[in-house]
Image (cartoon, rainbow, N blue to C red; front, top):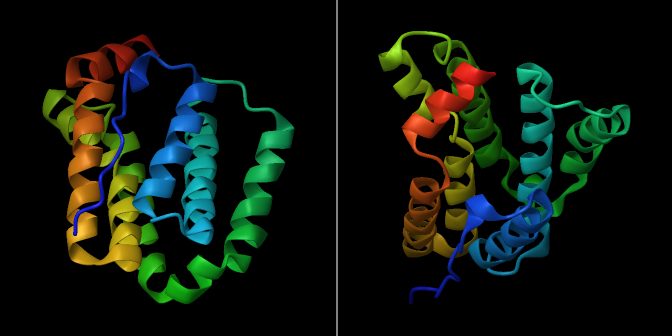
Length: 169
């Protein structure tokens, strides 16, 4: 049976605070209200965004956010029951997700073909979300979540918008 998922709405037009609220709703749907899995995804989302802001240097990152990021990465993730139960499956996917994000950061400095690759690789956290959906709800649920995430990414930022943002950075 396929789970009915809520619409993303105008995610692009939302404030950062409203985007985080919407993500929480979507993470709950994707993880079938498994609170530990939701907290895992929220933690990964937070850590990856702080890391990205530090690398891109496009936002000031307060020391308290950096401290929170490291606390989550070194302590909270390891205590999360969902992560502990599925660690053997998640670690390798997280490795791929991080490696592809690192590649994306390098490729975005290249020609248009490299930038197209960077545009695709930068969202590899979506694969981690889909895998978590699989662990929680099986193959059909993962496919439903994957389809929903694809709809959101098509609306979120076009390649031309991405290129313009990177060229203005």
